[in-house]
Length: 119
Image 1 (cartoon, rainbow, N blue to C red):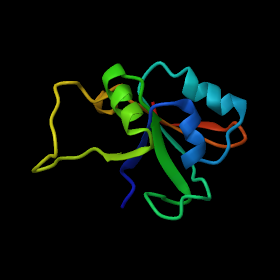
Image 2 (image 1 turned 60 degrees about the vertical axis):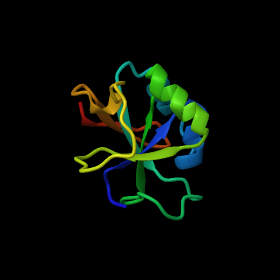
Image 3 (image 1 turned 180 degrees about the horizontal axis):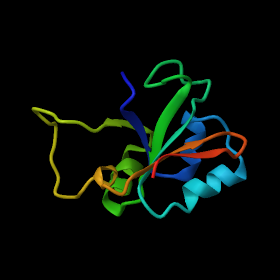
Image 4 (image 1 turned 180 degrees about the vertical axis):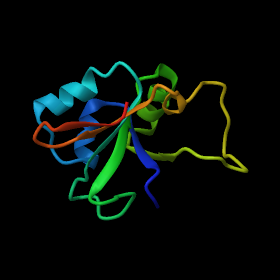
């Protein structure tokens, strides 16, 4: 699938389904993030296929109310890729939060490691 795919999550507890268990420090970083952030983290061993690169996955906890509600209704992690597309399945006027220029990228390790990839 490539490296540009991101798991979209609506709740912090969904992190367990895509990533290895985190320390409290790493969970606090996700829970209290004020801006849209894409996290890189070691993949959960139950993920046999999917967008895993060097043992890591990308995920984001989507807090924007409209997108969060959509993800909640789907009720499972959703894979998304941002790019230029010639055709789309649907269109909305609600801005996608990960397209903001202020979107950050962090690596979160299971032992509490936090590294800034894009600040």
